Length: 300
Image 1 (tube, rainbow, N blue to C red):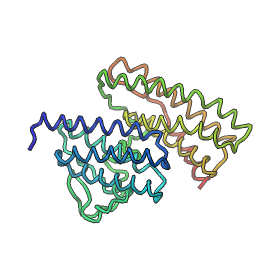
Image 2: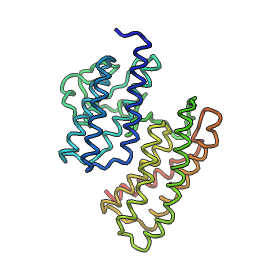
Image 3: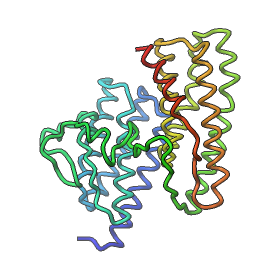
Image 4: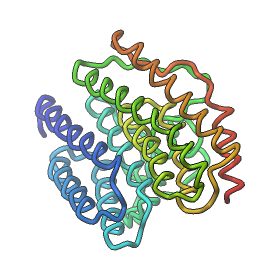
């Protein structure tokens, strides 16, 4: 058994690998086979570390994520969302372990989504294995439930839990704020271009990318409200990319509203950054989210 200091060093190395993978995955194209190959190498490096950590949830999850990337390479899958959820879950497991907490969340439904055959044997719960692996209502909505990105579900209006950050995190968040505000600032002009030709896929992709980037990095930084709004906005744009809806009229309005609210939350992060506990602010996103969900339902 390794002592606490050696274990913490292993966990820190693992967290560095996971965080690097999270950033690399933000703009990864599911059809970029060389890029997927690099992701596979990163996961193999993680496997070498977790052999000494001996945490079952990490072992099963990383194995499932490797299998999912292999399916992407073979074109058996085309959606990166389950893999991104896996990254978020890896970050949460490591945070618990490095803080001396036993990881207790049931991740069996995530393993099933990733297509893990290991779920045929017991599923993971309380850091160990559970009998069924069947996704229950409590696992979706109950205490400690997570969203599609693996972040804790918070009810609208619930106060944020301040997270004290160090200098390195502060630098990362500063970069996130600057790049996000700059990228979101391009969307209004792109929407004007799109009004001239609503079917222009290049312009739709140019609108999609800022939301995708903000979603990925905000999830990595645990800004859950920003992540959720960027995620559902990205989903709406993805429908347009796939021909499921046309970006015009009210849909343009909700995209602009999303940009406005994301800007305000990101500016709140910037304003509170010097306090050492950056916060997104108490901004209502529920009505806008409901409108976007309405359009997504219509598209279906």
